[in-house]
Amino acid sequence: MSSSDLVGIRQTVNRSGIPLLVGAMLFSTGVAVVTGFWMHCRRLSGDNQVDLLCDYLWVVFWTGLAEGVALFIGIWIYRRLARRISTLQTELSDLANGVLHDLKTPITHIHNAAEEALNGQKDAAEALPAIMESCDGLAELIDANSEISRTYGAASETVAVPVDFAAVVRQCAELYADIAAEKSISFTVDLPDVPLPLYVHKAQLQHLAANLVDNAVKFTPRGGRVSVMLARAGRGIARLTVADTGIGIPRAALPRIFRRFYRVDGSRHGAGNGLGLALVQAIVECRNGRIRVESEEGRGSQFILDMPIR
Ligand code: ADP
Image (cartoon, rainbow, N blue to C red):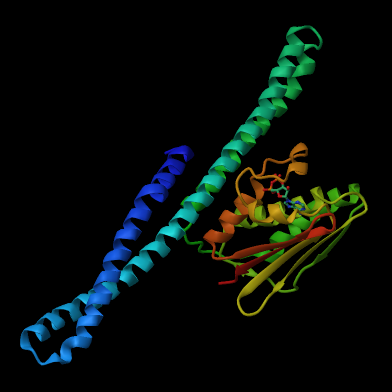
């Protein structure tokens, strides 16, 4: 079903079905309530036949009330569904735009490099590395997507052996300390002395830590600061905080950054494919964790990840 189908269904229901249904139900509820209540008040007449009719209408009164409540609940459910359909539509179109954009860029590079080689502007040997690089980018895109789907697919899979989150973050920090140093970024790491065992696949924990630290270093200009902190937060929670003084994220983009292929406009030119945070989100959701972000454009961002220790 395409998004235009969804729009069509919603419009048809909104324009004709719902007003008619609501009007008819409101009318019948109103008639039942008013006549039922009025006859109930007349029950004191002493006339047996009138009393019988009153009893009957008293039942109608309660039925009408119940109908009203059911109607109210129905409208509430419908409005929630309509809102959800609307969000899905936006997500679907963002996803399609993201996929198209991320496929078009490497394909254009491949085409240009091949064209230059054919026109004799470049040797084939010179053009090939660019072609290879774009092909690798495409393969990475497909792999990252499959990884996200696999993560959701294996959501209920149990992990028998705990993995020390502190050790994983330490390894990741060691890797990125060098990259940060190359950009003259001050890089601080604060880890607990004791292990923080999590029942999550090691590769998934590595993805979590690497994606957050990679983004922090990538989106922080030279001379900025990145800090990585891991600690226990309350009972049974391991909290990883990755903060930077980088470009920050516009407020309007914050609810979208965990969607597949979403990248803030200014970030589209740099390395990346907009799938890193979607994978982080998939892992966090499937392992009963929580992630939130605080960010101010031009001042920096802070990602706070909570994972249950058991
Ligand atoms: P990408 O491959 O582009 O890094 P992600 O899914 O990891 O994809 O991130 C999605 C987008 O969120 C990024 O393109 C960027 O616009 C924004 N973003 C993520 N982390 C940060 C950060 N630390 N600072 C600024 N922007 C960020």
